[in-house]
Image (cartoon, rainbow, N blue to C red; front, side, top):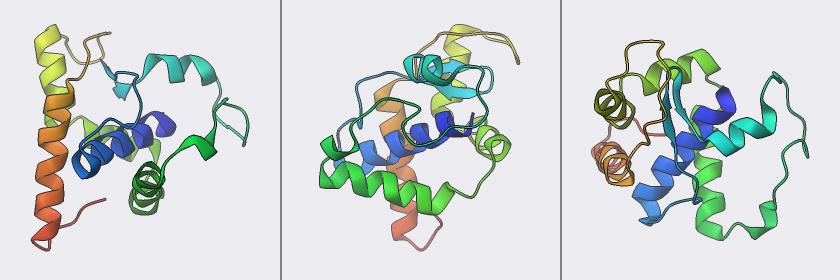
Length: 136
């Protein structure tokens, strides 16, 4: 679950900082927070991952993508999966997707989070950071 949430935060901050998605896959408003289903399928049922367990090409990242990921890992990497999940449950993009779906707590939902809502939320966080408030 921690991987899912760190990917969500990297995606959101990258969208705000670079004004473009970090990757093309969409997040769904699952009961435990935002999840990109294809990534979930890569590690379903596993609680520990090692380098190389999930296919990818880190060298394909551009400087902005790499920086967004590194900043999120520095700022949020020490949080637990539960802490990150709890955080997403208080944030508008996930909450609004759950409301659109009419999903009750712990009920499954495949409703997608909208990039415009993710951008608005994370843009506000980064603006707060400019004013001395905490950010990733």
